[in-house]
Image 1 (cartoon, chains in turn blue, orange):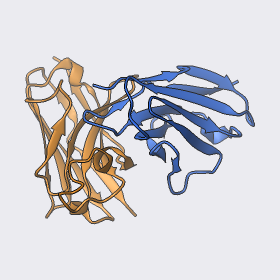
Image 2 (cartoon, rainbow over the protein chains, first blue to last red):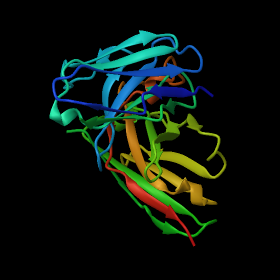
Image 3 (tube, rainbow over the protein chains, first blue to last red):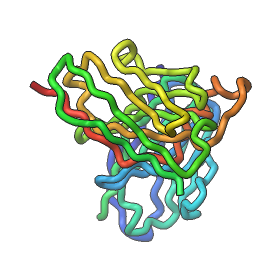
Length: 107
Length: 131
């Protein structure tokens, strides 16, 4: 099974900051990497699919990059509504697997 | 509007059974794979099971295979998860989630992409396994 590891596990940032979250797969997954945002008490929301494709309706301040084993989610200018937990997920094979999550908190 | 609405959760004793349902609306149900994803209290997301649009292909994570059974009724636009031999570690919020892209042919219905890029999620239903 493919293991997904995110770093950091949590971070503190201010509104307007540029934020980067990293996800590493235990083997190559080509570009089959997705990012989700989960706010407290809510279901996850798809942000980015296939490494760099912005899901419809997601603000352009979110972007994704990477291929193979190393991937990045970037928020170019953090907004108050972006404070949440972010998960990466591989859709390369079965079983699909998620990273452990990165909590983005207010500094 | 595309919607998924889960139901059927509750408190059950270890070894017991439960059936979860997920009622869908706003899209051509049979054209999309569906999944169950769970989240234990205070923990991260765990993919549990997936099923093809036609219902003929199913996938499971190892820890639930043989105990949980995914199925769908395309005439009723409803996804199910039959949960048997439940364990304390099955305690979680269970989400149903829809694949982003449709797949209506055998050329795609075994490709992970058409299952696991999940663009719409329900609000979840809580399963608690305890004595």
